[in-house]
Amino acid sequence: MPAAAAPAHSAAVASRPAPAVPAVPAQGVRAARTWPAAVTLFFAAGLIPESVATFNTPPLRLLTSPASLLFISAFYGSVALLAREFWRRTRAGWAAVLLLGMAGGAINEGIIAGTWYRVQYPGYALVGGIDPAVAAGLTVFHALVSAVLPILLVELAFPAAAGRAWLPRPALAGCCLLLAATTASGFAAPADRGLKLAVLAAVAAAIAIAMSLPGDQGAAAPAPPAPAPAVPARPVPGLARLRLAGAAAAVAFYAVFALAAGLIAAAVPPAGRTAWQLLLVLLMAAYLAVLVRTGRRWTRRPGWGPQQTLAGITGALLPSILASLVLPAALRGLEPLITVPALAVLIWLQRRQRAGAGAVSAGPRPGPAGTGPPGGY
Image 1 (cartoon, one colour):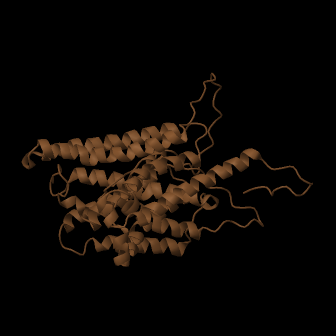
Image 2 (spheres, rainbow, N blue to C red):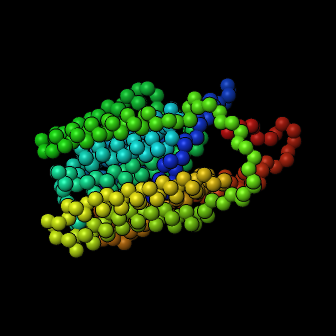
Image 3 (cartoon, rainbow, N blue to C red):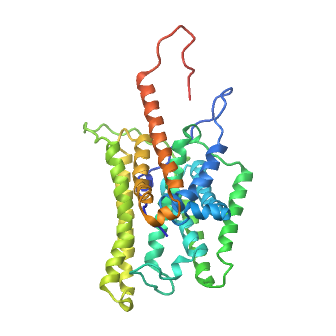
């Protein structure tokens, strides 16, 4: 489970309708390749939650046991790619992507890792064989950090391919097979099989609900809005504020997941902690609700764009990146081998965005007729 940072801005767009898929490039215009973006998401979806936002699978383990990288990529990568493909092919809203991420988190912790069925953190307790507060906390974490955040980040890294489907049918089938195989591995041990089957049924229901949520495909064009009094629109928060908000949300997750539970552990004897699990579940639900509500307000303001999204993601990952440079356990696991390059990628993306914004602001320079930049992109 998480050890040093958590979700943040990934919920900022969780309730915002997904943008429409761009039109197919005109004849003669070569579309950007999508396989580099798909491969990047396949590996990033596992490394971000396991080795950047937390220290669950440190580089030392990846180096000494390369199979662990293959396994986490097979699971996390398949979930993220399938969720994104559903979003782009159906034009579903981000609420559906968030729900699919929760389903993936339930498979991860409720079936494969089995963390729901044992008490491993202070202040938590089993209720009917399941730790409901841990289940709620880890499900929220994975929905945001294992699904939404990697999808957003990789689309920022590959803007030319961001608006299109990435997977041909064989790749879709391959992701489904990998997801099925990694899920089945959770049933290898006989322990808790009945509970895991119940979780699998709940996952199937969540996927069905996500696929039935309304999107914007095929919707009738809305009528023009009636004239309204001019009200100055609030500007989007500044980039520094968004980074701070992302970092605060990361810290707030652990305040809810670890600090609140630690206070319960200090004040309540083990025999009396069962009733307190509801409080922890409600706190985590309130945390998610605040993130979604704040994100809905901010992302709907005029001027929201890739720079703002990247700022929030950077802030969300920064606490764990900084912690990896000072915590002895992180240093023993060689965490900086992953967190420092991750920070370098975030800085590079920010500089690339600034350069692109500067080029747009400057505009094309006048030149001889017929030498201007080609239309489109």
